[in-house]
Length: 96
Image 1 (cartoon, rainbow, N blue to C red):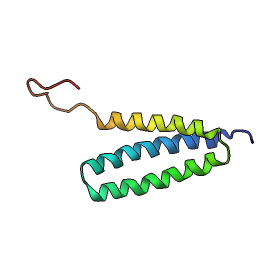
Image 2: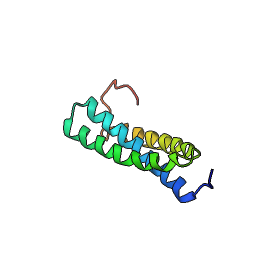
Image 3: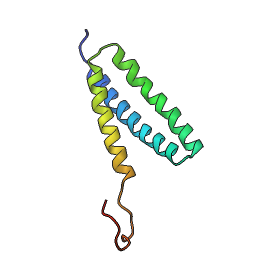
Image 4: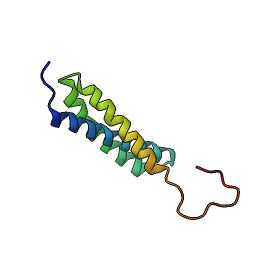
């Protein structure tokens, strides 16, 4: 087992964070039945995930960094998708 390269570790975190964010956007497009956005997000998803897979297959420790990045990406994208509406809430609307 070789030493951990900090730049590779940071790259894995960012790649998996971006991968999870893109996965959430892909899922949102699929649920909305938007074919072109779903296909586009899917291709971006696979491009991003390849960096993380290639990076951590050389050293299993990078799986931990991938998990951290995955959590960050999913959290950030869910935050982005669930922003409160800009205007006033209608009377009797349930709070977010």
